Image (cartoon, rainbow, N blue to C red; front, side, top):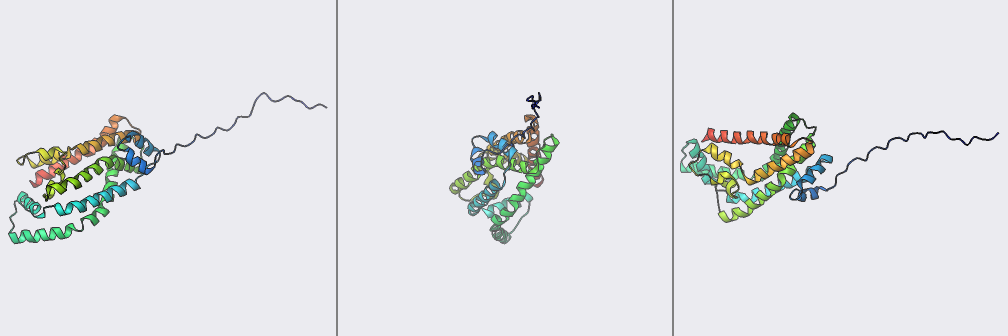
Amino acid sequence: MEESTDRPDYEPELAAQPAPSATEKFSQMQRLWMMFTSPGDVFSDIRIKPSWALVMVILVLLGVGVQTVIMPHVDTESTIRARMEQRGTELSEAQIENAVEQAEKFAKFGPIVGLIIAPIAWAIMAAVFLVMLKIVGSDVDFKQTLSTVLHAYWPATAVQLVLTAVLIQRVGKVPQNELANVVKANLGAFMSADAPAWLTAAAGVLSVFNIWVVVLLIIGFAAVGKISTGKAITAALVPWGVWVAARAGVAALFS
């Protein structure tokens, strides 16, 4: 009996091969540099695999380091006199000297406090933006949001801190409330002394560096959160608007 050489006219279906999962293209160090040159590519990479540890450590250490450089240039006595004048409180010279001594004593612990407070502040900020992103319909998670926020703040913060540390060497001692104006990059630095305190405080937020941050936040939220530019603008600007209003309100309250 001859064996049939006929084959079935069908072939068994092969199981569909799973699509290869996307992997990140850039290392954490590459992301830091590319935030100055190609932020959109970095945020697309963060969508795939967020990173936050390195950028947070650098931001915290840079902030603490610059704080250490700035501290000797803070005019503590002028700062205290200005605060007392704003509150309408009169102190004797002995009381002022004592207040200055206590303030300078506690200022020595500033860098240590910064090491503890800064990471908590970044986490809270990311949580606020996460709530906004969820409200506008994004599927982003906390780790992606934290990574986006840290990378968005990184370029402007690094440039501002370095410029402040360099330029303060040329101006000598300044009151604490004038530190933000060492680098004249905000509208508050150009306000007259007679301007309302709330207006000066609000104008102080409108700086080149903050605009830089907001633009990067919008780019990042759109890329990482997979939302439209309009929704990204809303998620970025609403917390900033609240911050400006809060600063102005506090300044008006204590002026």
